[in-house]
Length: 582
DNA sequence: GACCCAGTAAACAATC
DNA sequence: TGATTGTTTACTGGGT
Image 1 (cartoon, chains in turn blue, green, orange):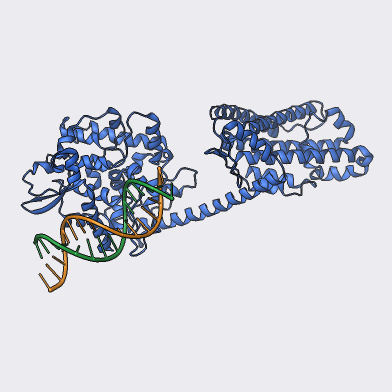
Image 2: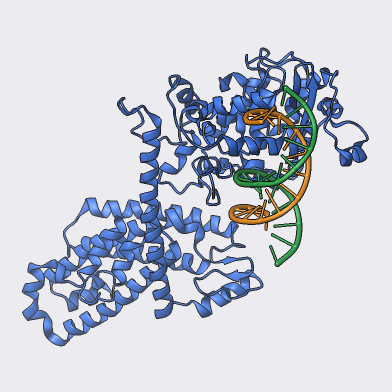
């Protein structure tokens, strides 16, 4: 936009024919590239200015002056970019006729405005990524612009050019803003001086380079030597811009498609579309919750997180969202792809909150839930009043909760059975009604990676891994609020019993961990634990476990529910009442 | 590339 | 006898 208009201005310059300006117009990111291009433009403009001055000095000014007066555009734009450090006002007055001077200065002002705006945008978007060299250059650019501004003001004071208060003030204001932003960005850059977007894992990330650099100093040296401003680098930069542009076009298309898909899934065909605006997680979490709750029964609504990618912002896509609508490539036979992958399962999916917020959506839309079978089974079992289900009841839960599981029954039922047998955390218990399945929470926790205990870095990484890094503060606050509200709600929380402690025990990644003590009525479940059905006859044989613990697994489960936990583990719990699922 | 984990498919046995 | 349940193995693919 600004950049483009600036480049349009530059296009009027007769000397600008190497496509640099068009490059500039294409760019919208990558501060380093932009600065390099500006540098190119500047050098080019200065070169043209020198030629122009030579022409003027060689006596061409008198016949051509009328043309220049009639068409200010014919004043080379490069002239407008000339640094006052190079040409004094007195020299200008000697060289140019007053109309030429006036036209030149007007153009200079306009261009400067564009430049300042451009620099303004660049500092906004890319300053933190700029290398120190580029930052220095940009500062020089702004300095130069300030001098230009001063120069214009001098000329105006001398009555050489008419005053243009609006443009002048605008320029000054922008200069001020840019300087401020620059200062912030510069300091920010200093803080992150140890990193560079073109440097990672000990090698140069310049396209096609991959040169090994032991440290940042070596990399900087390499960068300056191998990727200095030359034709090759410029060409590579241009290619990269094309790549980025293509990706952005692709992203826009995909986002549009996603929006259309979501819009389609949100509503009944016969109804007017209530979701003509993409949901945005920039809205508060509580709002999202209200939106979820506000959906009429039977009317599917999208996963709140799934709406995230719709926004064209550069937010990190929500893991949940991407996986929610993700059909796996290796679902080769029956179209039943893996629900989700390990990472998202173990770190990223608060299943209870996701289900709570999107229950209607999953119930009605044929969208694969972004959870593993194990977590779903566990959730189903823990959601039940007795925290035990027969296989058939688990099946029913799947089909009841997810439209997706109303087809390909053989496949996913086999997977359910497979998971029940495979994972030690699922304990088969035979009671008078027959065999039921329960969850051994200890085993379930075992199969998870180390929790966020101790290391703040780890905690931070985990949170960012949750995709919450892409959420705004209000949403995170709302999540925290929902947790607190549950923990503080006497109706939802029992006194610190073993059960309630267990609520604090669970990993953050799967909020269903927190619901096992809360029955479907939304209150803390007074029901018996699986081990309280202690008349279990059959326990799944687990020789290895017995070797480890010398105790039956099923008897181990509830005993350890009351184990004390590091406080750190409790901090990140996300607790949602079970009623949200209904 | 090794390893782990999750999903899928399938064979098989036990049980209903 | 067929369906269901439960176990196990093998394979594939993604992620680390």
